[in-house]
Image 1 (cartoon, one colour):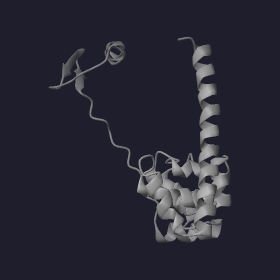
Image 2 (cartoon, one colour):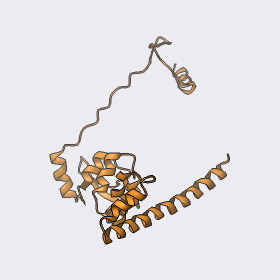
Image 3 (tube, helix red, strand yellow):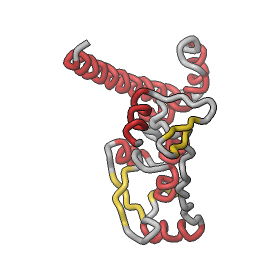
Image 4 (tube, helix red, strand yellow):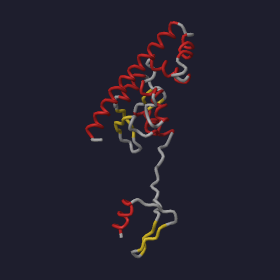
Length: 189
């Protein structure tokens, strides 16, 4: 398959997927309007659509319909589940900023201030930036750092599956290498 065909398919998929998300948002708004009219309607929805939608999903639909939760969070939002939970606690307007690439101030260990996108941040950085339902300012982040010291990441020496001594390579038991790794190794001696 050519790159142009794949690019076309990706574009088409994105368009249809976005329409699907918009449809889910509209469906969630319909659900919320119905349960606002009569809270017992929630049970009717669950019963009528139980073969399509698991019971655990309805609270998410309500949160999306009430604009408590960004629709991207309904589908997982992020690979890091802990960061996903952090963002879910933020107000909807801040969630919008997060998913639109917004950058937030982050205080580094050495006192510098960086602009960090939460989607690109580590879990620890996101936890420092976000305080439950708010974004911490720099002084609040300083206090957070004092309560929760930033862990130093130790650089550990990698144990190689071989040793080179006197122009000879000795492999450890159970060593498996790719052609690229073997070529790089041969170039090293």
